[in-house]
Amino acid sequence: MDTSFDILDIEHKVSVDAGRELTSMKVSAKVKAVFYPKSERELIFLYDYFTKNKLPFKVLGNGSNVLFSESAKDLIVISCKKLGQRLSRKDDVVTISASSNLSHIYRFCQKNELSGFEKLASIPGTLGGALKMNAGAFGQCISDNLLSVRVYKEGRVCSLKKEALGFGYRTSNLKNCLVLSARFKLKREDKCKIEQDYYSYSISRAQKQPKGLSLGSVFKNPHLVSAGFLIDKCGLKGLQCGGAKISEKHGNFIINFNNATYNDIINLIEKIKKEVYDKFKIKLEEEIEII
Ligand SMILES: Cc1cc2nc3c(=O)[nH]c(=O)nc-3n(C[C@H](O)[C@H](O)[C@H](O)COP(=O)(O)OP(=O)(O)OC[C@H]3O[C@@H](n4cnc5c(N)ncnc54)[C@H](O)[C@@H]3O)c2cc1C
Image (cartoon, rainbow, N blue to C red; front, side, top):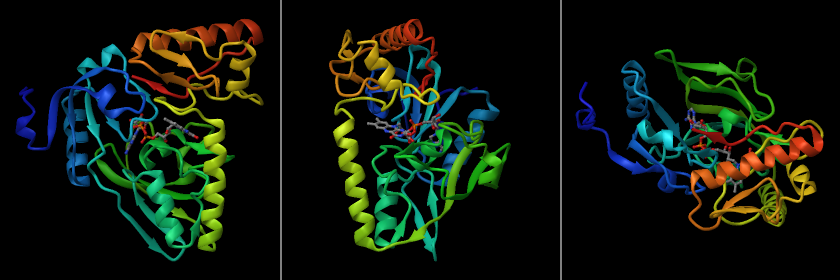
């Protein structure tokens, strides 16, 4: 097979530090190539091509939940960054392309006097990434107001109802498909009220969460208790490994403060898991995806 990729005639770069360029934690990790489709047609074409030719690949939204390991060197990334953000509205139902940022979706809804994205607006991801892991904040999940998701799966585009998608706490069964767009039924609300709510959630988030390069919460919350609380009780806040540290502000955040490597992050993750298990007999599970 021709691996010069030029024959595909879709914008791409080879041998890219996708960790630094395409993830929010900016931990260096080279991948074989990154493709930037500019239309849904190009996106589906690449998805099909790499699947059929058994080339390992990964679709990436904003890379705000993904940590690449050294074994990503053989991976091809399909970045959704140049796909554009398409949103439309009919009454109180909005249709949104998967590459739209949650902050952009909030602004569209606020202008259209539709409530439902105020709590989720500050999550720095795209709709596709958020749906896949059923992202959430302040007790609301992306799947709450969802009607259906349009996906590309097993060679065809189809629309799947929310009930078929197995949404749970930070999980869904959208694992083996390409998310194209989704429909949400929202609630009519006054523009100013929507904005006020948005600001109060944003302020609350800024008070609780640290600044700096991260992937948000590293671990899922175990039943009835927060992972951050357990990590704090183990006295691990502020612990450093190389260029990475456990945030002093929020124990469930690992910050890349000085060119952290993949191993720095993994060492902290393993240390946290061990200490929390030794003290509480609770096994923490990663919320972030390690590839
Ligand atoms: C500072 C900070 C705060 C955060 N706060 C929160 C929070 O409050 N709540 C929360 O739930 N998360 C939070 N996160 C994590 C992250 O932002 C969310 O998980 C977000 O939904 C990921 O979206 P993404 O576009 O960045 O996905 P990516 O990281 O790019 O990808 C995540 C997964 O989704 C898949 N994916 C992406 N697009 C598609 C597509 N179109 N089709 C199929 N699969 C796709 C990828 O293959 C990957 O498996 C935070 C992260 C940061 C850095």
